[in-house]
Length: 263
Image (cartoon, rainbow, N blue to C red; front, side, top):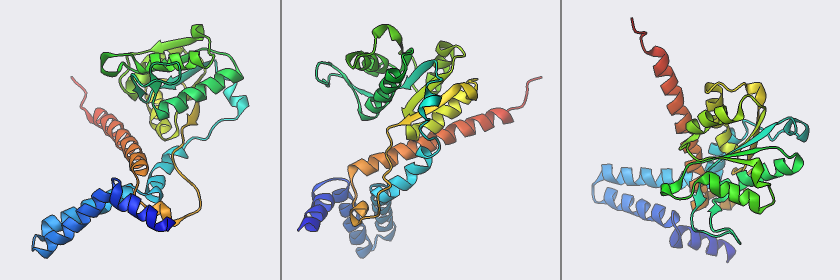
């Protein structure tokens, strides 16, 4: 009964399972009607969508990113003179208890990581993130959340101009001013953030990566890991976004190296 309920829920009632099922049936129907190319295309899309929606494949995609940096021990964390937190999205107008706006799930994990570091040793916190649709910025929402949990407002510096990770690193380089920094961001995002920091001129010896917000599951295999779910499709999307982002910057760097010098 439990298995039947799961199968009906994830294959019939909810996306992406019902979309995958529809595309599969459509592909088979088109092939039956003689439209082999369209049928094969529909089956291919269904297959890719299915794989990306499973816990098994999503974890395989995101694990290499998350395993690149491990959480540092407390002795290493305590060497940081400043804490920097990268924004990952907020929910404007979505209250969190007494707060009028709230970080989204991944930003909340990052903020809580910074809060824990601050509890361990009081030091300045820089929160970085741009304004969402010209409203309150990610940095402001993160600051409000930290203050709500007990961080002294005078210890928080907001950077609200950066629109992506590259701009995060540019502004942080100016604000951190050669101090040793604990960089807090999602584990899957840390590799790209560290790469861009190195390209902006940060001394790698003065950057302590503090990964949080892990997504991959390393639980023993169970049959339900093969069920398609929106959550694991989202995790796959995060992983692919990081891979494409790294590829973009690597290609950009390679193109820059190959440009002929003027004169």
